[in-house]
Length: 226
View 1 (cartoon, rainbow, N blue to C red):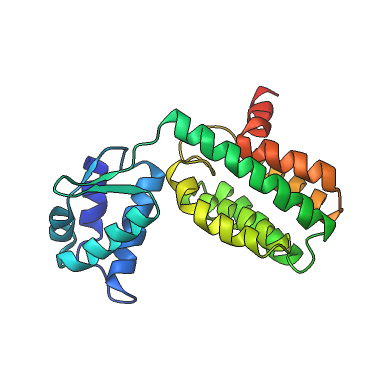
View 2: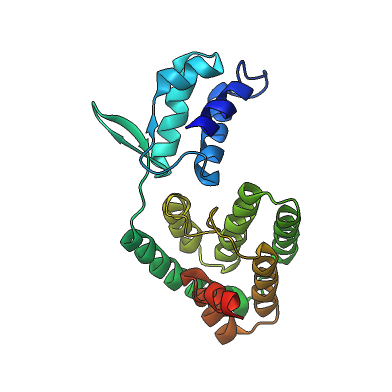
């Protein structure tokens, strides 16, 4: 809790520019994804507003967005807390993500990611930069963007919509770039570059298998054992 309090004090009287609720949302979201706010930790809107030196309304709006993203749970009369993730929930999310990405990768490889190669290369560069700067939040954002773009590159108009439905749960379940991951992020960047090469090269079977293993974590575990 001390880390969160310090963070709120540092942002007291948040500078003008942009919607205040957006900036409170980004602040709290960053604190959750970085692990500064831990599972089951209470979110007291009035206390956050007081520490930031703002009204309670923008904090309330920010918390609503976090509830929608499944990063926060809200129970009437009991308040809001940072979402607690069970091992079973995380495994179910990985398996479902693996099946979706296997299909998306095969379809994208058939098209050689046409129209998305430059964007995907740019995202890999962003990941490399975030890894070099030890910025796990930016790394996670770029990681999620990479896989979102692959769904778009598939050419199947339903896949991006399915990913959009799943994405909040993937954030909450830390199924993409776990902030507590202690391995080499440089290896993860190289893995994404390898995945992109398969798409661009039209290697449908290889891409489908590699993306599924990547999604369920098997590829990462294999790298860690090297």
